[in-house]
Length: 274
Figure 1: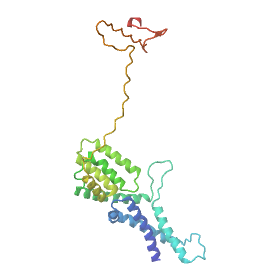
Figure 2 (figure 1 turned 30 degrees about the vertical axis):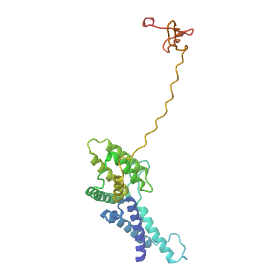
Figure 3 (figure 1 turned 90 degrees about the vertical axis):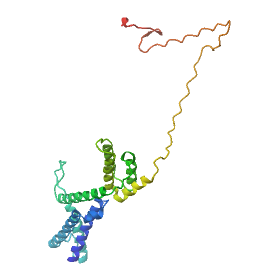
Figure 4 (figure 1 turned 120 degrees about the vertical axis):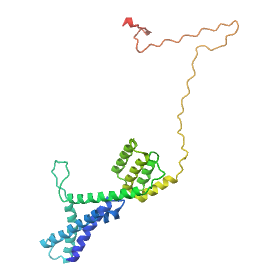
């Protein structure tokens, strides 16, 4: 029975560890060794062991025939205890037409995760503020390039994360009560949650090493069509002695869109005619 309990505890602990690692990608080891992380894993392990004890005490065979060897029944019980306990812990019960968060065993796990979140946030902020990894950079000039480098370091980038970064960048750009250094620190803290401190440090170092006066190609201006040559009814000839220049032909009057016309002739209206 001890071996079965150890196997069930291993399955439950593996599920808890995998969830913590997926949640805290920048510092998975720190998350596992934090009090909140250890408590989270302990709850998953305990649930698996308790589930195995209950299954064994109830004598559940899960429909297996009596001719099956005992080792097969033990494997089934261990698998059901490890995976089933994890599923039960993450159950949420809520009314069908309610949009509020449900209650149930998942509330316990969410409370433990909030403890781990608060502790890791404090550690991350302390570590980030104790080092000036973004020295020599400017938020107004380098925040877009820094975000692009950090995002492309990840194989899969969530759309929600990209939208959150874009909203934060717009908010910081519109803040007049913060200096450029303050905005850069806030931006660096947000990027640290995504890629970690080491990746952010390398991205900042790459940006500092780049020359700032790289020539940019000038945008090509669209060619403007040449103006058509004016048409003259009479060729202009210099008026010499004894020569009379023919009078120029007056241009036909164009009817106005605002004045009414009768018989193709334009009429002028005065304010007294209205």
